[in-house]
Image (cartoon, rainbow, N blue to C red; front, side):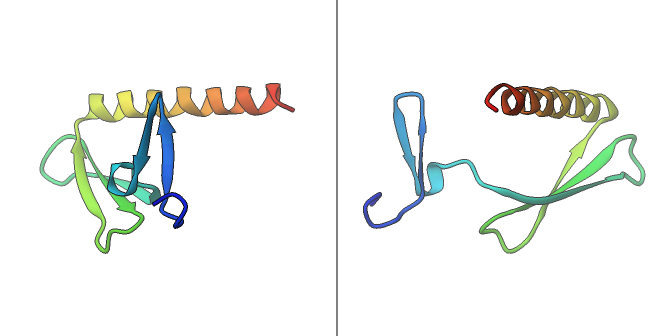
Length: 83
């Protein structure tokens, strides 16, 4: 399947193919939810026709933001050290 051009990636000692690969996020948006304290996160994933919504409480949104910020900082550090 790999020789035929199927997408694949290595995760540890495993080779992932097709639907086992983590989907690619094409776009996202967030908006305050109406009627509940929190946010609605809308995700558009590659290969999916319709986006999907995820409700996050305020504390879940803060945790996600902290995780994304930490991952972004790690990515910047890796880029600077490999130059």
